[in-house]
Length: 100
Image 1 (spheres, rainbow, N blue to C red):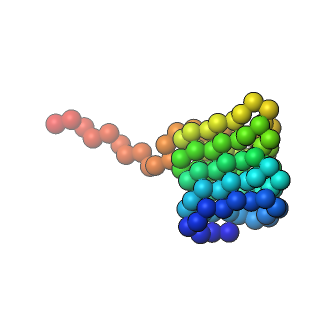
Image 2 (cartoon, helix red, strand yellow):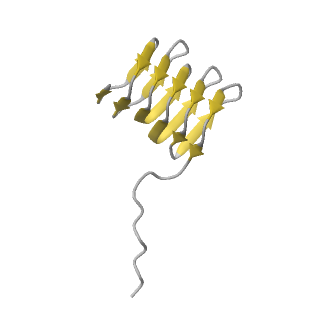
Image 3 (cartoon, rainbow, N blue to C red):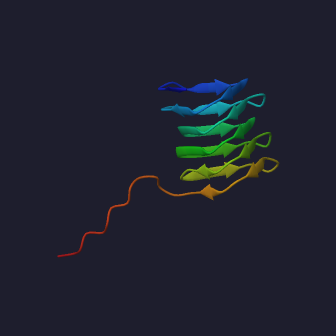
């Protein structure tokens, strides 16, 4: 799935999701595949890597099996998470210019 609009998932989706807007996996939702979006909110189940340019939030009812990469990551108490977290800017780093 690709596109520019927000997406709310309340059923099961199998495959890659790549959006230019917020992706929300509702409490009854399940995604079997990677998610890439500016912001990802997870209240259901995700089995795949999650990459966000802004923020990933996993609510107490959320479950993630995969790696999370975003500048800001929130995993609420009670959430299930198995994987790695990488936090930081996802923009290419420029080498420092020498001072003249």
